[in-house]
Image (cartoon, rainbow, N blue to C red; front, side, top):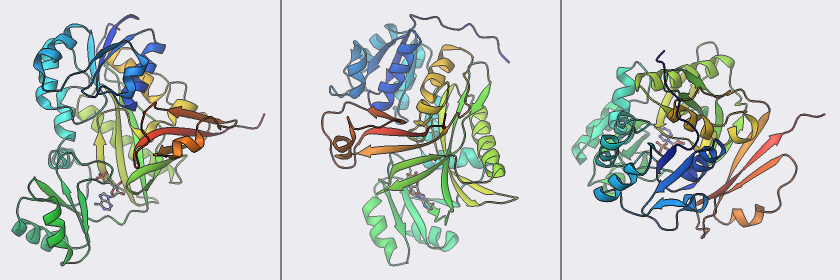
Length: 363
Ligand code: AMP
């Protein structure tokens, strides 16, 4: 293990991205006595509310990026689509954690699947698709149903179409073509689970318990702990997440999403996606772990030892989408930890806050 000199309270942490994840990272950093500076093009970013230091500028604005880098001691990010050129400008001027490799791999589904496959980690069968003819060839090899996805910039189900019959292929291709695509075999999974993994600057890797995730309209609705899976499946998922963090030489918190295909003595688990950042399915850690995913991310990028990931109670994290926020805020009951992101407009499909509903142990 490498000997690291930890950065001290008062350290200025730059965060690229001003959404709720940046906001919660900033709050965690403040708790440790750090100062945060948020860089985001959108003036109404929720993270701007929690720190006085901000830059409102585009990610292509090199002068603004350089000025930002010179105003902080270390930089991190809250979303995986930070342009590589942006990451490069930052990394030339100040330490950037996680490093550009994690961005490169996770921004492109083909690069990600290639990386995972080379590491011996199972993913759904896939083929690159750059033309209508490629799609037919990919369908012939992979079979149907299958899922056609853009290789870049897909999230919450955007940029993907399920192809169930050969007749669906035309419409799916028409809807997505013009950019690089990938066809994936459709996985008839038992459950979707995810693991939050953190790797420290010294190479120490810790993982949290796997969460069982349910999506509604392609958006994460709940993460339930414990997941109703075998201990073997949980160990396997945690092991894979740790392996990914180690192979990337990662520093910080990362979310790894899995499809659990079969449980039992020899569980079959495929990686769906990796997110090189704190992750929505890890918000439950705020309520039931001594050190949550946000604090552990900050600890990692500061070169601090990582905190305990042990889960102290059962918990359900429920996302509040759109108008749901108004029905819930101010009405929380014992055992429910509300988080409200402070977004001004409750648009449909927008993540506005979440509840951590803790199964409080009886006295
Ligand atoms: P993604 O954007 O790749 O995370 O996909 C969003 C959601 O679509 C996943 O959480 C799954 O519920 C579903 N999905 C994605 N890819 C597949 C697949 N190959 N087979 C079955 N379901 C999928």
